[in-house]
Structure formats: C-alpha cells, structure tokens
Amino acid sequence: MLGLKLPTDPRWVNLAEMDLEEILTDHAYCEQKAATACISLIQQYPDKVEMVKELAPVVTEEWGHFRMVLQELEKRGLTLGRQRKDEYVNELLKFQKKGGKRDEQFVERLLICALIEARSCERFRLLSLYISDDKLKEFYHKFMVAEASHYRLFIDLAKLYGDEEKVITRWKEYLDHEAKIMEGLKLRGDRMH
Image 1: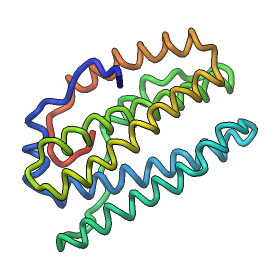
Image 2: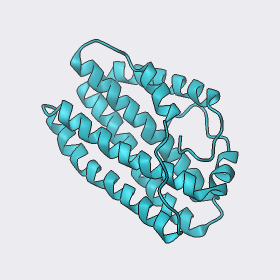
Image 3: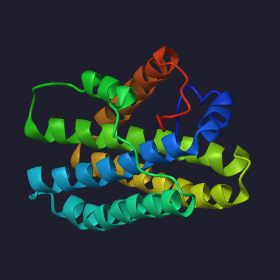
C-alpha cells in the first residue's frame, strides 16, 4: 500500500528496543515536527481552503501524539532527551525541487510529508508486530493506523492541487530517491527514520 521501495531492515526493531528512552524521544520529536509541518503549510498556503480544512485536525492529532509519547516516557520512568538532527528528512529536503511556481512548491512539500508519514507508518507497523513489550505493540499499532491515514491524506491533497499525472510521476521519483537514502543511512535504533 505505501509503495516504499526498500523495507526497513528487520534488525531495526531489536536495536530500537535496546534503548526505549532514545527511540521514544525521537518519536516524540517526530510527532512535534509533524504538527509543526502542518501548521507551516496552513500559514503559508491559507488560500488552499480544502488543505486548511483537512490539516487543522491533523495538527491537533499530531500534538496529541506528542503528548501520548511523553506520557509513555513518564510511565516508564524515562525522560525526554534532546532533539537530534533528522538525517533522513534532511536528505529528502535536498531532493525537493527548488524554484518554480508556488503551487509546484506546495505539491513538493505535500509529497515530502506523505513520504515521511509512509516511512513512519512502516516503522510503527514493525514495532507493533515485533517489539517484545505487548503494551508497546498496542501503543505502536495506534500510531501505525494514524500515519497510514496521514500518508493517504497528503497524497490526495497533492493530487487535488497538482496535475495528477505529474504528481504520480514525481511520487515515483521520490520513492526511488527515498530507497537510495535508506540504503545510505546507517541502521540506528535511536531514530524513527
């Protein structure tokens, strides 16, 4: 369904559960950044009425997810660590087309958001299936479902505001590039991406 070209190395779950504080910290900041990205899109493109309507509740949902991860850290006697640079997202942003029309830039941003949500969904699915802690399996299943709907929403918005054929072509380019990024990144259990 997600179209990702390169699945996550299955060893990632084992690495992630070796230090729950680190993966939960990174997860918390990913949720915060997702809320911020939606706010930024609304601020920069208020004329995109359907997008504003669709993303406003996502802001609330993503911020709620941030709070859920904070609660999980607290329940486990863990603390929120420092935010780290997200190499994955930075590499995706380098692939984003620069210049061009305002609407083309808008579609590029929607596709990047869709790809981040798709990879997050895939990783949450792995955690929901293979992490040894049953409570965390349930916890991550909820996130997987939410990320899948967000991924779909961003793709649908890109098709709504862009030329559908061009969007599909560009999405395939993003998927190919994302696979190369994943190949080049070191497998780390302290990062969601």
